[in-house]
Each structure stands twice: as C-alpha cells, then as structure tokens.
Length: 77
Image (cartoon, rainbow, N blue to C red; front, side, top):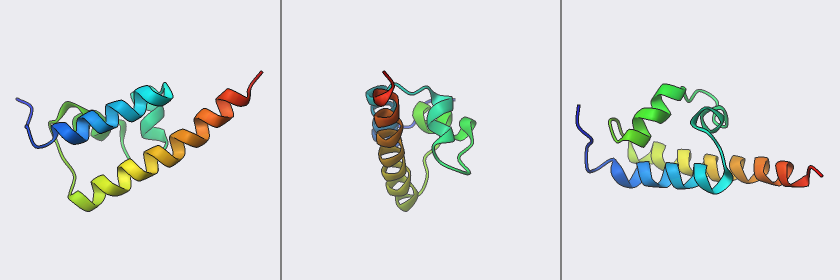
C-alpha cells in the first residue's frame, strides 16, 4: 500500500506535535479518547485520512492535551 499525497500534511502535523512534546505514538493516541493507536499510525503514515472537521478537532485536541502534559512533566524537579 502506498502513501497518499493528500494525507501528508496531516501526517506532518501529527508527527510535529508529537516530537515537539516528546510523545510516543501510544502516548499521543491516549490523549484523545476513542482514538485507537492503529488509527493514529495510519494517519501518520498517510494511509488513511479523516474528514476535514475531524482533522481540525484532532489537531486542536492534541495541541491542548500535549501542552498540559508537557507543563506537568516540566514541573517535576
């Protein structure tokens, strides 16, 4: 199965968010209830792409939750 070019921008965004906050795919998937790890992996690989409205919600939720986790981790002495 080949990557689709239309999914690549979403894949890049998801990977960038994960890397920015130092999260694994598993950790990232757990930030969003009802998001299976395998689905996140398919999004990052460009194999699958959600509807536009889901993309917006997904990216927004990841950014908000990742920031919370990063601030908690940074607070640990």
